[in-house]
Length: 178
Image (cartoon, rainbow, N blue to C red; front, side, top):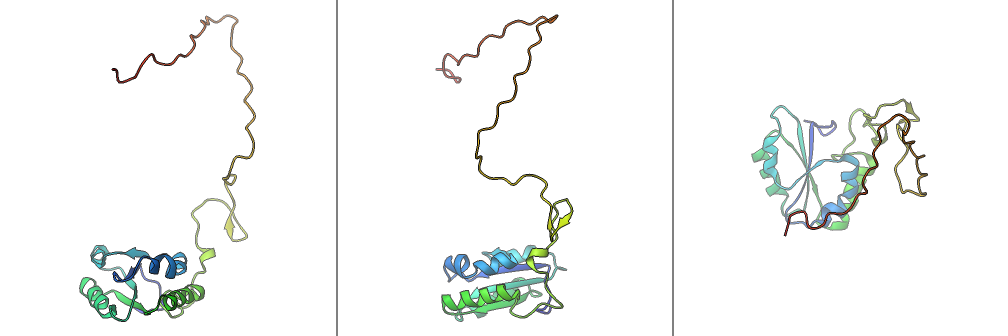
């Protein structure tokens, strides 16, 4: 599978020898733009259908890239292995952010042109206005004023058998007994 087309499944694998900050800080923008499925174990690749195209983007250092490449090939021989190899944290952050800013998920431009993130299909019903769906309800947020009380409901008294209701009182003890 060439690097210039999007696969059916795109996975992001962070080398086990790296800390969580390599994902949460260095790969944050990359994940926000492309949203690959993050793998913690390469054995999960066995669950992907055989006829689906798969790319595994591995964030790793030079000392573990060979091991990860062999592990991917053993689990899924048809998977494309996209290794992002940097030994320094700042270099990895720069490389992954550059990929995200250019919209190059695999380090090269997609063919013919990628779909920019702001024009993806939105399943929300409604006419498109300015490239985004029309809101179907008021936006949520904080309540800034007390709601006005509803008008009282009139009680029928003429011709109806209305008995006064007893006031509600708390229970005399615990519900479970004792």
